[in-house]
Amino acid sequence: MRTAVVGTAGHVDHGKSALVLALTGIEPDRLEEEKRRGMTIDLGFAHMDLPSGVRVGFVDVPGHERLIHNMLAGAAGFDAVILVVAADEGVMPQTREHLAILQFLRIPKGVVVLTKRDLVDDAWLELVEEDVREFVRGTFLEGAPIVAVSSKTGEGLPELIRVLDRVVAEGSSRPTDGPVRMPVDRSFHVSGFGTVVTGTLWSGRIRVDDELEILPQARAVRVRGIQSHGESVQEVRAGQRVALNLLGISKEEVRRGDAVASPGLLEVAMSLDVWLQILPGAPPLRHGERIRVYLGTAEATGRIALLEEAAIRPGERGFAQIRLEEPIVAVRTDPFVIRRLSPPLTWGGGEVLDVNPPRHRRADPAVRARLQTLEAKDPAAVLNLVLQGARIQGATFLELVRRTGLRESVLREELARAEQEGWAFGVRDRWVHVQAVREVEVRLVDALSAYHRTRPWRRGMPVGEWWTLVRLLAGPASELVRERLRDRILEEGGFVRLPEHRPRLTEAEAAARAQVRSWLERAGLEGPSRAEVASTLGRAAEVAVQSLLDDGEVVELRGLLYSAKALERVERVVAEALRTRGELTVAALRDLLGTSRKYVLPLLEHFDTVGLTRRQGDVRVPGPRMVQG
Image (cartoon, rainbow, N blue to C red; front, side, top):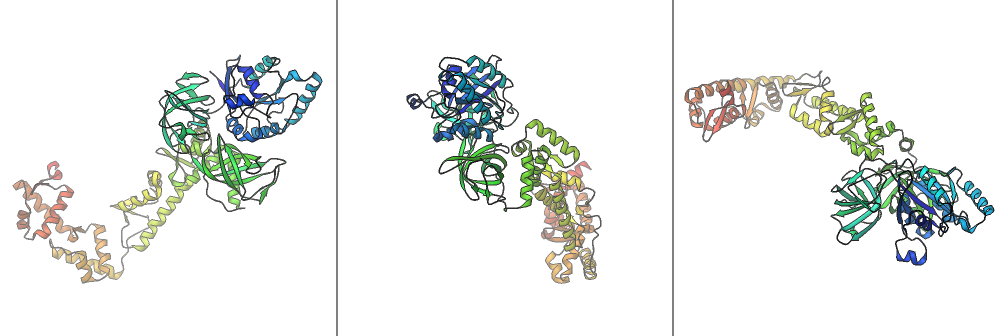
């Protein structure tokens, strides 16, 4: 079934609730005080099926100026609005304020209803209608149908139903393919069931038994049951009014302004980059002012940091950062409204451009250029900016949905185009900007060049050390970076080097290398330690030893240095002994080699490592190399 959420708006006592009751047969005023005073205090709800089959959920909002905060909580989820103007009074202050709020919240369409038709004659009604047409000129309601009705006599209601059916015929356009997001407008306890929260589902779909979370407190919950318009259902989709029976949280732990969301996919905001516009007739908004922000069903206090001028004057707009005093859930492109703290009045509104941005310097051209790009909403440009901000860590697809504010289908198209054009890469489950990859490549090449400068005698950086550095700098993009550097960096013999690098020794280091080689060949199996070589041959010996180790002419075992040739001779002796005896003890090898246990143990451990031998208790038996060979 196609669905739509339609809200009421208008001045207090202009007949909004009476109109909803007349249309649906459902009394939207729930509270005893509302019925006693004849005035809507909080949000009311009703529903009906239109002739075309569209099921409409009505959200009735209070009209009193002191209850604007409740009106804002309801208006955030409208697909269309019925702007109510009493025919006997015409446009009033809250009519103007409500329409301004609806403009900022980007309500796409609506109907103007002139209520209390039975109290005025035709001539007066004609004057009011003309006044209303002038009033809505330049707004989203310009050219909208105007219907006169009497909730008391029923006059005009059939026409209103037909008009409303035409207006909402397309149903909701909210995305069902995105993460779940439902701003909460009510929380209560139902005996035998537990906690129930209600709201309009902004995006995604919810099924019974889904695991979700409540934000900003990040409380895990499970959906025990779902109702929509009083009927139990197994699934709801974006654009529907929803009541969720939740397990895992009490009604006191969730309140209006919280959000039901897919786990880990929505961001809790403490600051927002925005564009905002000040209403004509409102006071100028100055840098540093404290304000109240209304976003979704949430209400939070914050402070304005203007990014260009010292003030935004009435009727003008500008970029700003809102630094919040309480956390709220926000997504890029969300509309919002700001109000003055005292005296309370609607100051203006705008759109979220970035969530949790860094603090900016005022009048920074780079910041202005970035925010202009975000405001322009070009999908490719927005994706480019967001991926650049994600740097080498990149972002998952769903993170990009949240950060860009793009619908999933649009984002997939843009990512495919970006990959085809070569400025973005899919890496595992993440997406990375080519600029971030290039920056890491430059840092890696510079690091390798620096390594060559400080250790010119080495063949290069050891492979293990190199790939540790790559993983540290490139993170998820390590394999991508490795592949892209294949032609610029050579990997050979356990080392990584730049193509132009060749090991270089000074005369003293070359002489020390020859002395070390000669010493180790004479020492045979009783090789010296590095410390002994250094104390005998001086500082150049350190370079000499490392050079010989790199070239494979020398092997270091337990801190002792052996000539590779000597080690080969011992390997042949061990292999022959195992073939003839089947096993070998430490003592037996010591006797065979005519040396001490001090030198035999490191040798046997080495042979275990390379697979020539395998330790079995106190003896060595043939290892994999001998068994396979």
